[in-house]
Length: 148
Image (tube, rainbow, N blue to C red; front, top):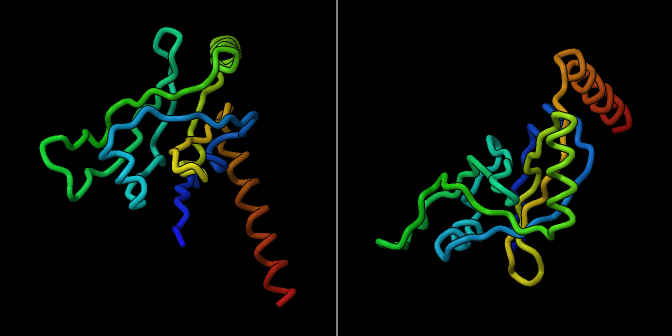
């Protein structure tokens, strides 16, 4: 029985309005995938940017593999995301036109053992939007306590 790896960006839904979601593959080295399978990765400070016509994830931290030797990887290197041309073009146009951003929301390993990254096209929230989100969470928590 294998454990499932699911690393979330909890700040994403608090800091941004998530408009569209995509699932992308990631180009990784051997020690990076082993660290992800150990659950030693963080996407809290990560964001995505275009270089030419390719999409890269920046600031995603994958800890060095404990059993790795001289072939170990850099923890915060830029990693290329794998999407088809149509999706890349659609994202590129929206990011250019509207001033939106692309952020990672979930890093997981699918049933075939391949690491995938869910990314979302997002628009930043203002402070009053964040306060509204906190109020809704508190109200939901109070309702759940009352039901118990």
